[in-house]
Image 1 (cartoon, rainbow, N blue to C red):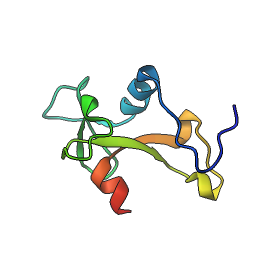
Image 2 (cartoon, rainbow, N blue to C red):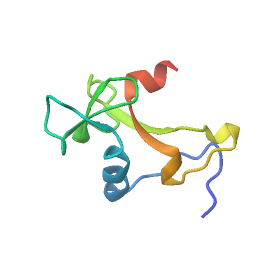
Image 3 (cartoon, one colour):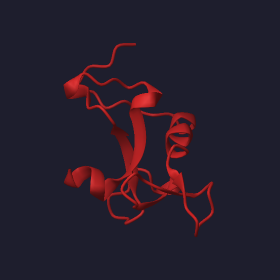
Length: 87
């Protein structure tokens, strides 16, 4: 399926698990539930899409779709939602 640049895919729970697992393991919190993004921000798996939580996260494209990136897993990473929206 070709994904249009403006289309935000609906990720399955399995896809979200794989993407979330790409985050760094926290030395303080339990790895299955918590990860750290590339900027050092803590995220919690069940806070996906939660804009009201400091632990909220979303899927980020390393190379943005607008610059030729795609939705393949190697181009995706978990990013704290507040960090992603402030870029």
